[in-house]
Amino acid sequence: MKALIDAALARGRVTVAILVLILLFGAMAWRDIPKEAEPDVNIPIIYVSMTLEGVSPEDSERLLLRPMEKELRTVEGVKEMRSTAYLGGAYVILEFEAGFNAQKALTDVREGVSRAKSELPQDTDEPLVKEVNVSLFPVLVVTLSGEVPERTLLRLARDLRDRIETIPAVLSVRIAGDREELVEIVIDPLRVETYGLSASELATAISRNNQLIAAGQIDTGRGRFAVKVPGLFENVREILDMPLKVSGDAVVRVRDIAEVRRTYKDRESYARVEGRPAIALEVSKRIGQNIIETIDEVRRVTAEAKERWPDRVVVGFTQDKSDDIKLMLADLENNLAIAVLLVMVIVLASLGMRSTMLVGVAVVGSFLAAILLLAGMGHTINIVVLFGLIFAAGNVVDGAIVVTEYADRKMAEGMDRADAYGIAAKRMAWPIISAIGTQIAAFLPLLFWPGVVGQFMKFLPITQIVVLGASVLMALVFIPVLGARFGRRVAPGSLVEAPREDPGTRAYVRLLDWAIGRPVTVLLATLAALVGAQWWYATHGNGVEFFPNVEPNLAVVTIAARGNLSTDEKDRLVREVED
Image (cartoon, rainbow, N blue to C red):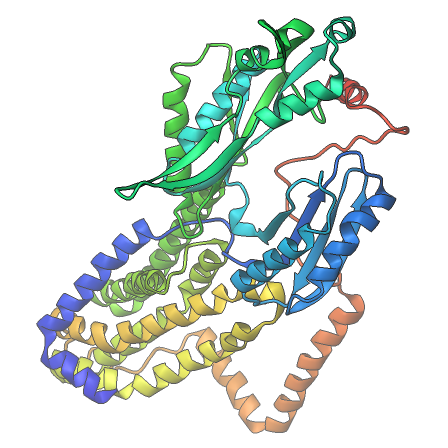
């Protein structure tokens, strides 16, 4: 360490230039580092959902769950597998050990699902395989509401979804509250019988036509091109014009025996905002992207699209996580500013203005260097990192104060400013490193905290280690160089006068003399206080809880009713509660 200090003092201009670069790039990193609400933690859960319309829970267990469970049992690393069958489908939840390889687990589960698909009923929808990842939850919900036709609202929502998904930072946009479109063919039984047809023939003709047939490739010897037979319906008119039967010159088409109209699947849910029909777009960002910039871009794209919409369409934004991030960033900046201000006031009263400025540079430099390192390590600014930065605010000043005060003491004894700061850094190097090392040692075991909570909280010790490590460099390398050039000059003998004894000092000296004369008593009293405090809280305290009780910022009203109610009946009950 002494060699590093000597090299820094001997190359003062280079050292100052490095400090300026750290401050500059640290500020840029603080501006550009991705900011999100929760850390990117892989919850060790993957679930597989299957839907088969109309299947009973009993049949769902036999037809869906058993084939799927048989294949998923072979997936490695599964801690527990839970299955549930319900009316219309089933799902399987796979729980893995914390810290699992999410990509490998997803691949293994998808392979198992692919093997099980051959044993599922033909009408089963494509099984969905999804992982639980907090970072993939929606960061913003855009709601479109208004007294406009449902088709208009759905068209606007889909257009806006396509626009938002072009934003590079957006991973996906899911529309909630919409209904799947379909074409309804209403057959006239009398006409079907008149033309000698049947409903089954009509269904077969439509299913055979509405498909795309790949006919392979043709190689002419001078080139190769693909051949396909397109047969997908593009609009209702193509269905109406489809021939069903030919007799001589007469052609029976769909329009002759049926009525075709566009409609939607039956409703399974309703969505309203302020009593108006609504559709919601749930926006999820890509992992590692800046949540504030992403949401600002989504708002901008939405505002541009709204300019061409009807005035009756109302756009709203809910679950905006950027508000929480901005609030936390503002709290951090305020806390840091207050911490630096209080430290500078205390140091100013004892060491003077120039020493105070040096300590202030050490505080700011430690945080900016830490942000630069966190950005280089690929981490984001989230609630745990912010808490770690605030928590470290009172620990980064100790080394700088010790070096500065010791240098002032040496200068008061007549030593040159450069030599004083050099000796102060070398003399206090190991005490400072030891003090910081004990703080790092206290947080180091948290890196090995098991389970999902450990994956979530590991960012706290990482932040502490990075900030405290940066404070050591500031105190022992950069502050001595700055002090040797810009530190205050102390008149010889000005700091070596005997301190005046005030009543507080005399009381402390008497207490210290009493404690030194009774070491056994002091030790026993300390042990009694250590054990007694824990015993007292264990028997008289309020217990332990995972999260503290905080004021909620939203409320959810759940409505329960007896009977197998239809969707419309449920909606009527909800409207009563809304009113």
